[in-house]
Length: 319
Image (tube, rainbow, N blue to C red; front, side, top):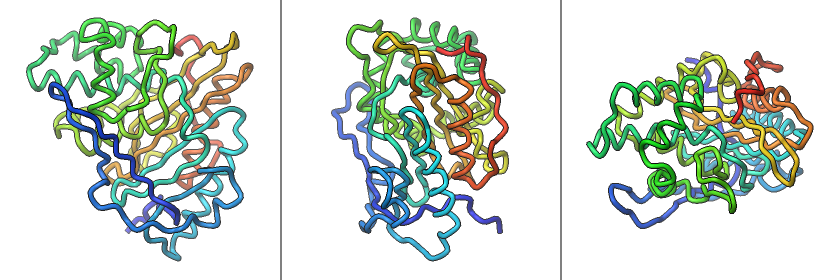
């Protein structure tokens, strides 16, 4: 029997339940693990020397056999500490509800193309219920958006099926409670900010709550992501059958341009682990550095050698 690549170590399990009022078709979001909250235990010593949530692993039942996993996560947490910029990562075990978090997991950042996964999930749901009709052109745009992170496809779908009317769906249906447009920006899909938990809720929704047909389509598309997205969560390695939606863009804040390199998705047997990593780099850093940093952190957490092999997108493709 193959050893499970991730066994979450001791810590405090925090279950986020985003309670909102349901509107037309939009269900109240609830964390999939909220039904049976486990006992709370004290943080493990592996996280004692780091900042809040740096390397903190969360579990209700630590076991002596977790030593190898502890070492992997501690090594990954050290990489997070060394990263130059603002980096937050969450790995959630869907089987147990336990989580490992490191870095700045409460800091808002430009969401970039990660919201394309929310758009795809929303369109499939509305098409299935008959609210909208997804013709051949729309379905091709959804496929292109997921495979190559096509901005053109995302623009067409955004304008055709709701524009900023998508946002209440994302916030309420998928639990992306802190997703928002900062003041003064154009209300487009690529001008949103969120925190890592927003994206964790989105991935968890797709894996745990979406209609089975929608879930299978999205998981398959994420596993077939094109080479331009072969980094980040993809670096969990072929044996773990990762699925990924990545976001990379050169943003401007305080008159300084800086790269975002984010990755969301899943890995492990039966997509056991929902994964989010967001990296907001300082001005002057390169997309190459961002891609390799987030990829090596994921590879380390899954016990793979680094530097891992990645495809670095051309800077001109980011948005």
